[in-house]
Image (tube, rainbow, N blue to C red; front, side, top):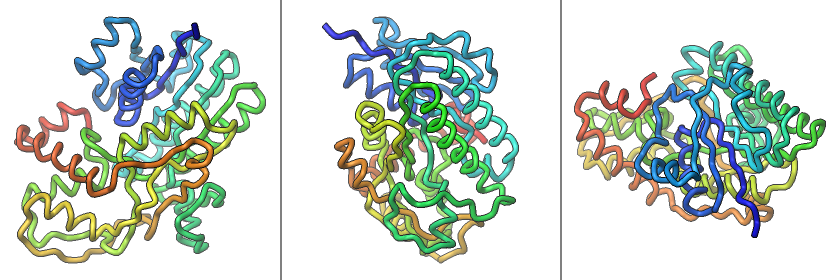
Length: 343
């Protein structure tokens, strides 16, 4: 009889982290430990998770991962470690870029130093397509873009890129530490993961909120830009496949190859929201790239990764969730407080 794998999810109470925990508890016979400081609320405290705490398959720790002493409270022998903890969000990078750099760098270095003295087998570091936003914009690289594209920051002085800087550091750190300290590492670069209960730091819930206020005319910021959106279920499955099957020190795009314009996305959501007003094109926000779409053949070949949720189906599920919760939380402030997504 095989031993149950021990899994550690750093940042396990967030949108992606709690979804990974739920998947592992439902689809795998793993013991899961969630670590978070719960600064954005706690998505891992539902009745679903409580049932697994009772039967002993789930445990959780409230720790500040920017403090090295926090790692003394962890075991030393996990089979899989997911490193998802980070300060993220366009509002954060624009308002407090110095704090984004401090927090994310501290977490990365503390995790690496802990791994150097632990006996963990495989580690997954979550990264971002933001890392090569400058490459696509300035050097006209082919789109869809594969994992070999050079990482480029367009303007090092712009706060918008402070998050990407920390993720580039993390990618290099985990690849080189794993080589020196004899643990296996895998990196995933996420591309616009979305779904129900993800907070308001994403274009889709933000559009739902604006439509609910019946803005007229409705400005479509970055109307001619394109993105590919990856529904949370597909992103979670791809992430788990990466840590289970990914080649050591490899990088994988976790995303969808369906590229759509922001205008098409906005009007589709407007239709779902029964919007009857007018639309007007508007300039995008500074630092936002014109196109983004991943090439995912490497993940398909190595992992067997294949996104299943069409963007329209996923967007409808997401919009339905936000419509319901906005209607039951008339006070936006109370909604933010309840779901832990206030800036």
